[in-house]
Amino acid sequence: MTIWMPTLSGYGPRYRQLADAIVDATTRGELEPGTKLPPQRRLADALGVTVGTVTRAYALAEQQGAVSARVGSGTYVRDTSVRSSTFDTIFEQPRQPDLIDLSHATPPPSPRRSQNLARALEAIAGQPAALRAGVDYQPETGQTWQVQALAGWLTRLGRPVEAENLLMDQGGMHGIHLALSALLAPGERVAAEQLTYPGLVSALSQLSLKGVAVPFDDHGIDIEALARAFEQQPFRALYVMPDCHNPTTSRLSEARREALVALARERQFWLIEDDIYPDLPGEANTPLYRLAPECTITLFSVSKLLGGGLRVGALHAPEAARPRLTAALRAQCWMPPPLMPMVVAHWIDSGDADALIAWQREELAWRFDRAMARLAAFRPRGQRGGFYLWLPLPPDLRSSHVVEQLQRRRVVVSSAESFCLGSVSAPQAIRLCISAAESREALESALDTLVDTLGDPDPLLWETL
Ligand SMILES: Cc1ncc(COP(=O)(O)O)c(C=O)c1O
Image 1: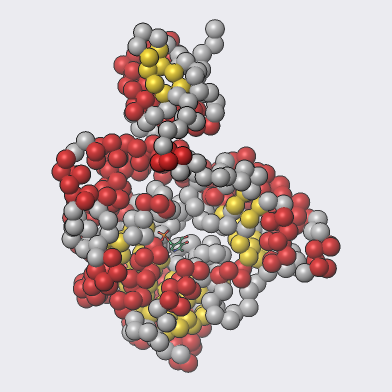
Image 2: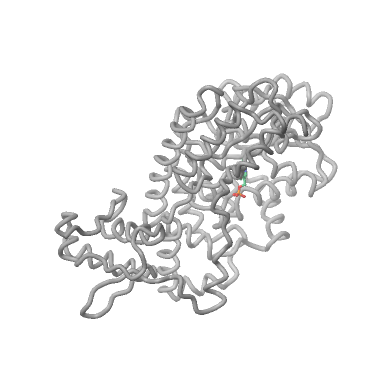
């Protein structure tokens, strides 16, 4: 008789890989409720591991609620559809299975994230001191050991930082608000690329700040245009995404980084460096905070690496700016909630964070290769390992029409208009978050729809809009 054979990821201890594979298979429906898991010795022989490894894996999968052991009978897949309380049922979100939403830059979905969360919460629940810290006030800038864990991890990711320069916050968006509210007064100006992260545009409006739109090209922001803009409308800060511009994926060249830093020093404006995608492969350029630490505030966040729901990030700031940033943080929320940085520190410490991003890197590279090959005729732009592609449209197609037509075909993407700063006119292009597809199959299906739509646009739609 054949037995169920798990596919192990190859990352981390074998018992954990096996437990993850079991939870994955139950989540995907490959192992149905009531199915008996293979006898431990048979599975151990089949996988070439010890029985102890299988026993540990089954116990871990049981702790995570995927299976339950029956004395003398074996281990069975649990029926998680049997719910008992509002708390159990509240998480059953209505899904739209036929809709493929590629409009948000979310990390590729994986059950590994919830498995890591379960492990971290379990470790925290087993430590009275950690539980106490989770409900107590803590220093505004975060617990030292948590900040150190984050600093060490960022350093390993190629962003060398010292813990004392980091101020913990609640992610990239919070970091933008903190930096702008601490360093600028209402009415002052902030320059940015003329297409930019929409979160910046809403933060400027919330804080009554004015945006100055600056042209850019494949090598990043145009420094001469920036200098001219300063002459006409002096600004206090420049917000910039040097490594992977959102939405066009361009990367600021090393030469322009140096020119930018020289200009910032000469004209005395702050650089707000958004570095929330710090894990892009390829040749690394020097982060701005390394070139000009005295005038750069850099935003880090775990959202794109570990998960957006964790709401953990950090600002890297020079000493002179830290008291103002800390005061802004205190005024906004007193301190970041201690529980989530604790979870992140556990992921980092246990190796779960590294294993997850090793998987994510491979997944994103696969998605990139697939999408670039499928869309080759349309010349998409992107960085291998990045979350999104930028697709300038063929002549005669308008991005709002294409977005609408795709939506009718149940694929959601963003048009260039969503990224405009001020009144700049939007190019005819769309952003496609390949990372966000629920699965590789969903991505393939969205790519098919896109190719069909761009290759054969519905003329009626052009006429009616
Ligand atoms: C360039 C950029 N900056 C900041 C953010 C916000 O990050 P967070 O989710 O950590 O608030 C995003 C989110 O998509 C982003 O794309």
